[in-house]
Amino acid sequence: MKTYVTVHAIAINKKGEALVLQRAKHRSSPDKWNCVTGYIQDRESAEEAALRELKEETNLVGKIIKTTEPFWVDSGKIRWVVITSLIKIANESKLKIDEGESQAYKWIKTGDPIVKNSVGLKASLEKLGLIPSVKLPQSQAKSLFAKLRMNGVV
Image (cartoon, rainbow, N blue to C red; front, top):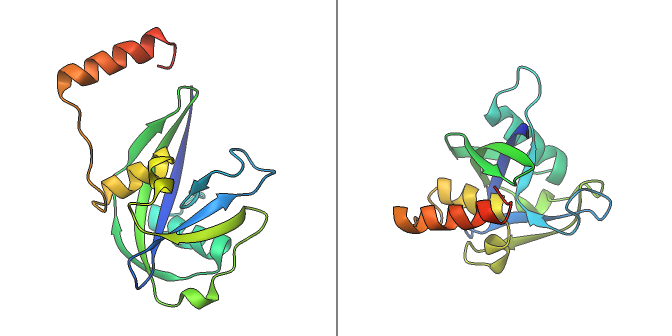
């Protein structure tokens, strides 16, 4: 299994809405919605990477309010180690998406269905404390894990 280290930049506007981008059709996971994401470059901190990716993908700048501890999202084939930064945007009028990366954007509330359908976005919002984290009782977690293993998912 391959493991990649990435950042998630959760951009929040003055209304408390989070910016999500719809991936371009020619990219992996086309049409999927997620926050700004990207790889950390050589000798770059996670916070620097989050601000850089935000600027590159949306032309926005902001101030980091909080950064999470690393966590991982495992797809079965790839493990993503993620460090998420919550970034307050002062001026969203400068928003211009990089069409090589994304085809559309939305500002959403944390209860939007997009959150439920994006594992990484949901995990990042949970780690930031913006949505409640659902914890299964240990017996249910073991049962779920056993079912996933039987079906070849893990």
